[in-house]
Image (cartoon, rainbow, N blue to C red):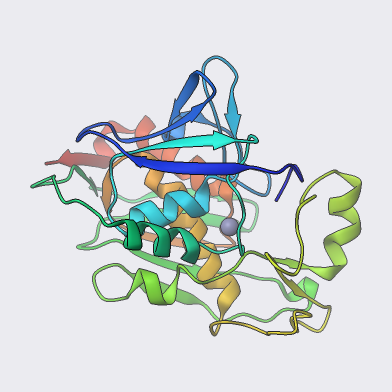
Length: 264
Ligand SMILES: [Zn+2]
């Protein structure tokens, strides 16, 4: 998606307690918020030795959504393939491979007090709740796209049906900027919904789901927040969420030991 390189990922079973670990050649990187090195357009992880893997968020979201906690992920080409821009192909692959249940109780991160971060008009907060819910609002009016607020609650809603199929999106007006900055080199209408300046998709097939852009934002948030390494019990609210803000809120959370507890 970003490098334009051919890339490949193989996901294999791992022992209980292994967690989610990427391997690049002989090097490895744990999927953890403190290994995130870059959040421009996607989430990139870096090892202490300097190996990198980009665009981990959709694969990470598929693993979280299916409650898969222990896998080895071999990456070739420095990036997780974008596939169709959503997480549905990962979900289908994991479901057809089969999922073994071996944790009686999974480590859970429970928020004890509200943490909020702000960046000009953007803000994000995590607050105490009884389930993991994500409630977001975006403002793409400057690009001509009107979107309604969107909420997803793991206790009530279906990740595979409502979130996993939502594709990456972008704006026709941004294409020149992206090309000039060598970003999104592999983007095409096969992996990205592109909106024109009237807010209409130029892709022939149209949208898969109502409010698909905000559903995709929720997918990205699930992938980014999965970098806690735990199941999450919190209410996530955001106005104009981004990969950068998702990482900032985790750093703010882990910097304040009174704001959360880990329960087994
Ligand atoms: Zn995404």
